[in-house]
Amino acid sequence: MSLPITPLKTEITRYFRVLSILLPAAFFSAINTSFTPSAGIAAVSVVTDETRNVLLQMSRGLAILLLVV
Image (cartoon, rainbow, N blue to C red; front, side, top):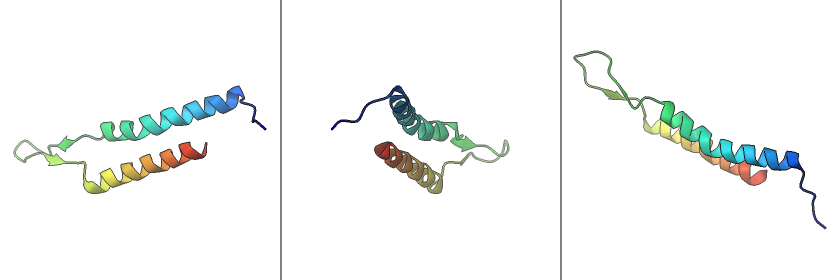
């Protein structure tokens, strides 16, 4: 017994694959890695361990979603 592959199923699967790769990478690259509050103060890193943890959880969640689809 085989399941018929419809164009809709393949498009949805392709969409989730691209989304699971690009979305966490896009969020991480959109974050400015250093922030200078004023001219006399040194740059402060915006990317913290908490931010990395949130992006890692998002990436894992999308990977699980991809496995289900």
